[in-house]
Every structure is written in structure tokens, then in C-alpha cells.
Image 1 (cartoon, rainbow, N blue to C red):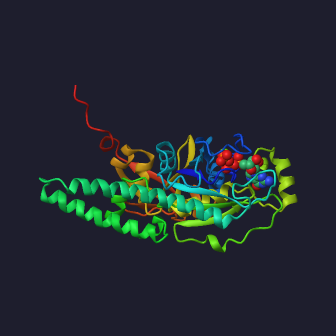
Image 2: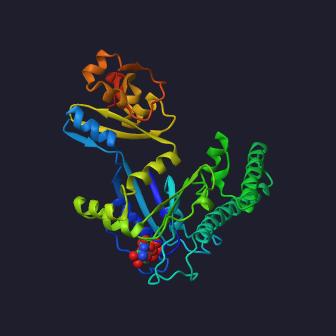
Length: 371
Ligand SMILES: Nc1nc2c(ncn2[C@@H]2O[C@H](COP(=O)(O)OP(=O)(O)OP(=O)(O)O)[C@@H](O)[C@H]2O)c(=O)[nH]1
Ligand SMILES: [Mg+2]
């Protein structure tokens, strides 16, 4: 899973990136909207994996991972011209966007508009994303019009282009009405059509209000903006400092600020929800491991996430939910109670399932290589 961190200059993107990745990337008073990307891969914290590791008695545990990209360079007015290729690529390479909105007051960090106004800033970025998408649509429509003007265009191609033109027209109207593309309920074939474009307002969006250390929690009502968007708050600077402190020291500070936990886990969970992802586990004598798959993934698709050969040779999966294993206390007891089930390839995996895939090595192996 890749999450792109975006936001206006000096909103605290790098600070939030550091808080989420326990990083120490340099934050700046003002980098002037220069294009720049920091990347870090972090383990997805999961208490169930810790429990499994402690109770299955295997040497290693392997977390699922998330990549965060801190993308600087998005400025007001950038979208109307269409974002620069590099910026567009950097943003569109992510599965979801995390939009940092400044909510902290600090006279030492000037705001280009002179005041701190989270709703205004959120709307400004959303507008940039939509303008960028409009520019992509206009460009596509021009190409379509050019091709339609050709004399000897085959009838089938003409039909295709006209259909696409109508669809693009709908997307344009939607954007012109001030609505980001992520609000659209796309049919599977439309889904396929838009996949070729780097539409930014289509990406699931997590809005993170970056709040000052001691400021009150801001009102979130204006940010509840549809099903594929969510909003949360984070005390960026405070948490960035806590994230790199020794644990005992961090615990003291957290108690003093009334923080129960760092936001890393919560933010990842919100992203899983937004993206419709779930976790399943596997183990062998060497390691227990967490995997991320889409919410509707079947046992066969889960096997495919582990290895394509395992999916190809799939026979059955032995399945037990981590809660059932916990209740039973041990795998042997769980078996005695009949809590370990055999499931076929169409079984829809539940979040928290532990899977042991039985597969046929011969079938799983690719065919003999010709000499
Ligand atoms: N007081 C306070 N200052 C903060 C907070 N978060 C960020 N800052 C400061 O705001 C300035 C900008 O923060 P950055 O994290 O560099 O912001 P950015 O969005 O990455 O900035 P660019 O990459 O230049 O666009 C830095 O001086 C930070 O120390 C906060 O929660 N409270
Ligand atoms: Mg930065």
C-alpha cells in the first residue's frame, strides 16, 4: 500500500511524515513549493501479529508494510495549468492520498494567506486536484475530436470514441459542478476506463488536520466529505518528537499531554478502511506473517498474494480466525474443538483469518522449460 502525503507549502507534510514513519527528514521554515519526495517504508502495527508471534513459538514475525511518500511542490494555481509531469507522476503513483491541512498557529511559520484557515486550505487543494483532472479530460477530449475528424476512420473505432467522449463529458460536468471524482459511483467498465488516467481527485483521501501541541481539537464537521474520504487530527510536531524518543521518555510526555497512543496505527487503520483492505496471517516453522489484501479477496486471491505458484497449485486452505485461536489457547486445543476449518478457493477471507494453504507443488510449478 502506497500513501502519498500532499498539502500546501509549510502545512506540515514532512512533520507528519516524520510522525508516521519515526523519521527525521528535515522540515523547513519555507521550502517555497520546490518539488521533492521523501519515501519511507513502515511496518503496519498489529497487536494480533504480536500475539501470534508470542504464542506460536516461531522465531520471526513479518509485518505488512506501508510506503509513505512525502510529496512537496503542490501549490495553489498549479492544477489549472496541469501539474508538472514529475509532480503528477509522484502523486498518482499512490493508492491513496493523505492531505495535511495546517491547523496549528505559529507566528514563526508564516502562511501565504496571512491566516490559518483549515477549511479554506482544504478547499484550495481539492480545487487543485479537480483542476488537474479537468485539464487531463480537456486534453483527452481534444485528442478524441482530432481522431474523429479523420476521414477513413473505421466505424467501430468511431463508435468507441463517441462513447468515450460522452463519458469524459460526464466526468467534466461532475468536476465543473465542484465535485471530486471520488464521489462518483463507477460501474466496473467505467472503473477500467478511468484507470488509464492519472485522476487525482479520484483517489481515496484522508484529511489530516495538523494541530498545534496545546491547541484544542478543531471542529471536523466541514470535512466530512463523502464515502471515500475521511478526516482525522494529529499533533504533528509533538508526535514527530515523541516518535523518535526512547519509549519510557515518550510515555511520560504522552501522559502529560493526555495522548493514549501515537497516531501511526490509527492513521494506517483509517487508510485500510478507506481503501477497503483487510489483513490475514500465515505461519510456518520459521515465521508468522501479516498480509494485506482487498476486502473481497478469496482464499485463492490470498494464496496469490503469497505466491503465484501457490495460487496455481491451490487445493484447500486450513483456516482459523485469530480470535478463535486466542479463545482456544493453542492450535492443538483449537483443532480438538473443531475450530480449524477446511475452505475452498472461493471462501472470502475474513480480516484476522490465519491461513495455511495446501497446494499441489506439481501443478503450482510452471511448465518444463524448453531446451
Ligand atoms: N508550532 C508548530 N509548528 C509546526 C507544526 N507542524 C509543523 N510545524 C512547523 O512548520 C514548518 C513547516 O513544516 P514542514 O513539516 O516542513 O512543512 P511541509 O509541508 O513539509 O513544508 P514544504 O515541504 O516546504 O512544503 C516547520 O518549521 C515546522 O516545524 C505544529 O504542529 N506546530
Ligand atoms: Mg516538506
